Structure formats: structure tokens, C-alpha cells
Length: 355
Image (tube, rainbow, N blue to C red):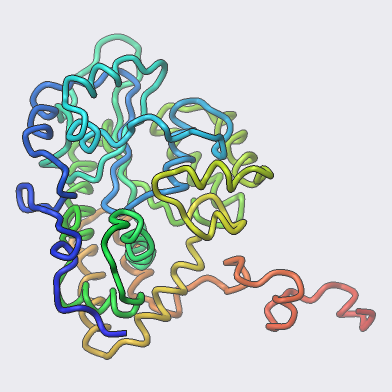
């Protein structure tokens, strides 16, 4: 299916604020007031991403707030999306509500550094408390734009978006990407902040959190926990909970504002990295050579920084099909389906001709 000629931001009726396109209900006056007057408190954590987060937000919110069940019903009921909530409710009302939250607070924003909705850089803290932290979520851009395509209809459900993933990739290549700003500019800008303020800002590659291997998830969460001053015991309990899906998981997840349909169908709570990479690569390979070359040029933008995280994901994206994980590790084939596809690992009985 061909991509539409109209720009995505025009289809969605998003509006520019300082050159960055936001949903139409956002108020620049609210963002400016937050920047000028909101001083976060010790222990606060801001999750920053250019792309939508779903189950990933559940896991990280659970971790920050010291909970032990990422599948919990109503886990995301609070207005975590700070600049959006302040725009809708009014700055004073929002800050008053947030002030009532007990324990460590977790907020979410898609803002680039110059529109970060709080007084930043953070002032030096006194005492032995945990200073505020900004965790910037980055990922293989192939994962990022597959998630974007999956969620556009959920973000603006009243808008008809009639194009497949290949059409979406062609549209982005032809017209660029302006929702919450360019993903690549957003990542590079925050990488510079992490270099200048390493005690406050850290980039996190979330690809491993969408892995079906507990050791991958454990490793990445342990890195995050060290930055956020969270114990390893808490990480161990959280990883165990991630891989023990409760019977009522669909009931809880379906109430979230943004839902990963794969998770509702029994999949991993965090967006499955492997399957999404395959979806993107298959769609890109179906486009013409010019579109593919434009995407390669965008991937290379991540190499303009010295940040090791961005360089790593850029090289993976540039690797194309060769960089994809083995299909059997994505969960796309299980049991008899994996056997029929020739993707299963032969068991000892097969090797002994006893299968």
C-alpha cells in the first residue's frame, strides 16, 4: 500500500512547539511554567523517550516505585506523563497532585532537552538523599519506528491511518519525522546531556528488555538499577515477576491507555524486540532502493555522537537482515511450529534416532 501524500503531523493535527510537534492539547505555557517553577524532589525519576512506551513503562515504573508486580491492575493509573497532565489539568493542580505521591516518584516525558518539563539541570542536592535522575530510553531505530506504527492509531483513535508498515516507512523516508521531534536528533541531544551531566542523565538501550531470555533482561535492569540506586534484590524479584505471567494479565493490560496487542495475546510484557525487528526489516526490504538508502542515511545520524549506546544500535541497524536474532529466539515459533519450520534444536533422542 502506498504512503499518503499528507504529512503524519497534519493527518494527526499535531502542532509545533519550539519546532517540535506535540499533540494538539499540549500547552506551551504549561511547559514553560514547569520549566521555570517545578523543582523536583530527591529520588524523582524521569523516563524520557521519543517513541511511545507501553509494557516497558509498566516495568520501569514498578522498579522505581519499589513495587514487585509489573502486571498489577491499575499500575499506570496516576498521571505519570507530566507535561501532558499539566497541559490538561493546569500546572498548579498537577503539581499539587504529584506532591501527594508517596515514596519515589516516576514521571514520563517525550521532550528533548530544551523542552524538558522541569527545572534542569538539577540543582545540587544536600544531604544523603538520592538525587533526581533522567533515564533516556533509546533503541534500535527499527524497533522504534515499528512501535510508532503500531501505536499511532491508539494515540489518535479518531483518525484513520490507512497504510501498512511499508507505506509508513516510505512516508517517513519521504517527509521526515516530526512527532516529538526527529528520533535521531532527540537521541543525539540527550546523549550530549548524558556526557555533560553523567550523574543525572543516562542513556539506556531498551532492546534487551524486550528479549525473551531472562539473563538479557536481568543484565539491562541491573545496569539501570545501579544508576537509579536500586538494590539488586529488587531487580531479581522484578525479573522473576516479568517471566511469570498471571492468569488475569490481559484484564490488567487492556486498561492501559496504550496497549501492545502482542502482550494481550500472551506475549512478553515488554514489546518483543526480535519480532519487531523482523517486521521492520521485512517491510523495508519490500520498498525500493531509494527508500532503503534514505533509511541507511538516517541510521548513520546516530554515528555523529561519541555515545557508545547510539553507535552500537546504529551499527546493528546498518547491518540489516544480517543483524537480526535467530527467528527461534523471537518466540515466533514454539513447540510443533518450530519443529515444522525446521527451527527447533534437535533433542538428544533425535540425535540417537529415537525421536
